[in-house]
Length: 506
Image 1 (spheres, helix red, strand yellow):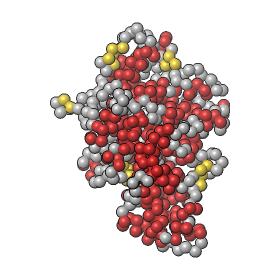
Image 2 (tube, one colour; image 1 turned 90 degrees about the vertical axis):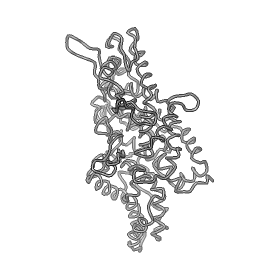
Image 3 (tube, helix red, strand yellow; image 1 turned 60 degrees about the vertical axis):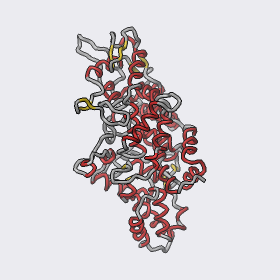
Image 4 (cartoon, helix red, strand yellow; image 1 turned 45 degrees about the horizontal axis):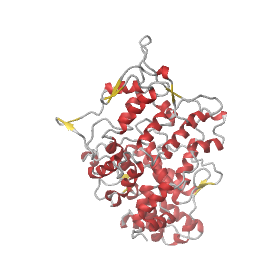
């Protein structure tokens, strides 16, 4: 045995995956945190999104202008794939390297989205530099941020290179807008933050990013959407460029110039703290200490073997850090669980499977009737929430505590979440039905039932008073038939998942 308590293991699994079933808890006890991570890192990838879409008819001509198969394939993996760590980290990358289905007005848009999801999943534990390049040259990103079709300037027509991707790749995907110390704190000169890049850097990088186009286009075969974009030399901006004080010679081809630019970004001192802090936020806590950020950034800079940007080492550092493994104390600790995280946790915890292979959960982004969040459906390139968001008019705001997920939290989303979860806990969603049969015998003991769900869902994070209140409510349901037992189970799950002590992942 690991020497860990079930509560410690359940809490770890909520950070490192989505859910903690009894089997998952036993697996961590058998291997320890590090051993379980090793097993997850080594787990084979499940069927790629693109291939699943092809196999299920979504690559047929009739679907060339829709996203019909993207949601099902995402829920298939988030809920049903055994590689929970990879799915959790890939979901985190989708919230950092943002592409949204709302911004893909192109033929075979669904296949482009599927191919992009595969890019993130397949490189979740690889090299940051490789992930940066793969995302940059993906067809989906090319469409979303206008790098596809970006051309050299033309004085006669007034055309200039598009600056959209040049700006966002620096601001959001690599170095951020202000220079950082390794612990993520702002560098200051004369008391003022130092900008990481200038408008001139954006303009110059935009020139570097000219000339990229889809590798073939077909009205009947979407295979080109999973291939990286290719370079067309005649569209490339001529002349020397300079990005972040690095000279890019006029003699370089477009691909060679791109390599220099991406190397420059990936090797910038900001990347470790900028990206590392966001991974901490997505997996562990919203407002990590500078010391925690520094430890993770140090691993990003050097994995111990001289390698920079080893994402497997970074994920391990995030999850095994002393700050991650200690229960957060104080009102600023932890993070508000994202709505998608809560839903997937419930689905995994209670064995949801798609009986017909449809995975027809659908789009959950309606805030009034569903979750107010759904994978790959961010309203903007800035994700559903900004990493530096501080809730206004709150104690968190007064103390400068970042709490990104609260940007999704309002009267509509709170009510929408509770109403939606009440429905799906009772009835399932689409052709996915929960299995509560293992807990029917326990339903006669309301206290034991609530204790079980408090452990599995919150890592035993509910106070004794909260558990007692829930148990009283659950116990008020009189048991005459198995239907009453089922009602107790459903009420216990809903009330645990509605409690503030569950919603804040400590």
